[in-house]
Image (cartoon, rainbow over all chains, first blue to last red):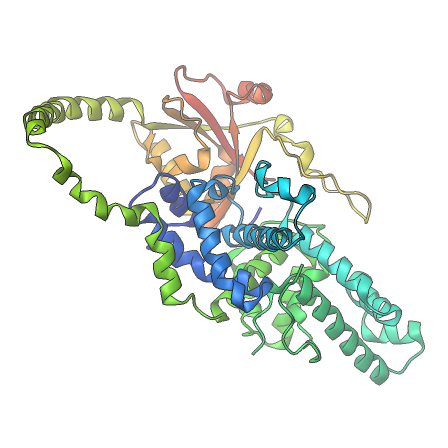
Length: 204
Length: 282
């Protein structure tokens, strides 16, 4: 797999060493982990939650990590990217947070009231590559587009055709195609951003 | 789900060639990246490349899965770096809840001891001091003698047994082999400095290596010392590796029953040690 070199400088421990230190309860390890990854975790929560909930979710996330003896870090597959893994864990946690809130806001009565007594749901940990997941997101984003945009995106990204070839296929001029392609790509990326906001910088 | 309303959702998304190249990746190639390629991709994500080099980076991102994953990681880290910082009071609240931060208040535990408990406590401290003076050196000696990592080299002539079904990559758009959940090996990326330390240990008379490699071996914790066998093919790759910071390595635990066909390839094995084979990731 790929690259777990996060922003660690040469003198700092690698992500593997840092996670080992946290799991062994080495003094100062939690603080070091927090210093290195809190910004990433905060960003991932901001990307998916309402602003007024971000701080609560962030604090609840760390409380859960500590309450479960950092089990999430035990499940991290060494040799893969820790930031990418954390982004996925945070995403699942944020989704769970919103689901739990929806349950709380449901009317009184019904089987929903029994759910808090059930066993807590384990973190969803998947060995599938992050790229594969993004590809699925790309397909979902593509499926939402208008038929004409879908055709353009398909020709460009999947068939890897250049502008001239696509213009010939569609019987349009090169200038018309350039404009249409640019707009189609912008709409496609807009959908991808909605489905995977962590990978895009925040809009001002 | 996306609970947060997209800010300024009417505004069209700027065309982002980096993300488009990642989305165009078909996952057909996973050749490990060279350090030059890694630099090229990092510069591309940071927007530091001219058009021609950007084209090269885009082609690499479309072809190579590892390149696309590296770009994704960089984008994530860059986006996080540009995002607002965690508020200070929130950081203080989170760290105050961490167990290590709670150690300080417990330092006053001795105040709760009654006067009658002091003689017993003094006796316990004296006993602990005796154990520390006499026992610790003996324990350290035993630990140094048994917990070292031995290293050996092996040349594997017939590599058929090292061929794993999960390494098969199908051409074309057909069904790719799914992820194998239970494998008899682990693929990890190990810092080149640790690997070079292992190779240096094979040349030393006692053939004992630093224990830095241990976290990558996934030790079972049965207390036995480790014996690491380094494949000569991996040695050649490390020596030819140039300035790469890390290197992909495949690790087999030779005590795993599923590795029975690999054991004969590496010659006689020492007894009483946990044995690992470090080889190339194809």
